[in-house]
Image (cartoon, rainbow, N blue to C red; front, top):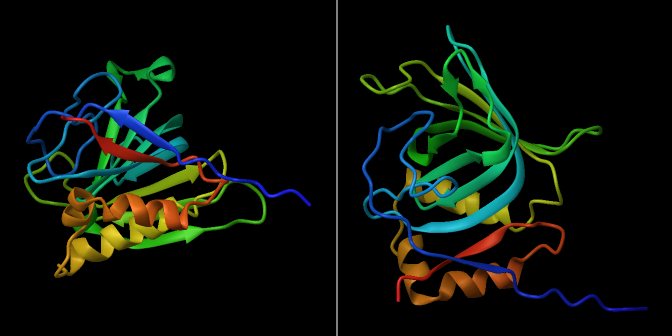
Length: 199
């Protein structure tokens, strides 16, 4: 019997610039072609490659991408399409889509018998913003598992709804988050730990 030792997976990316953008929108502010810009007081936690995405909004054409990267922050989920496979349709290029955690409802992790596991949910409409009707989304995990991603997603979602004494932002700053990620890491999940590289 062999024992498989999982090496620690981290990715070092320069911290995105602070940027204020709309509450719920497609094609929100980007640091560069692949990295979304951070909101004020937002910490990036995980990056999950190998994700497909679809969103439907009543009265609008659906947006979808077969390949992209999912970012989990302390405030949002951000899907960014693969730059080499972006679809140009009717004068519009779908680049990214943000899902504010505090406006996410009816979240469900689905494990169908056939096909990839996926996260689905509804993002409430926010009057005066880009999308003024509820958005119905699905995020498919096309490669590997999601055992590392899910615990931190649900923790961030819970904290967005009910503030806690020791918020994720403090855990990230203190290094505790890195230790927790390594403790629950799923070898089949290609999620990468986001390391702040400002120093």
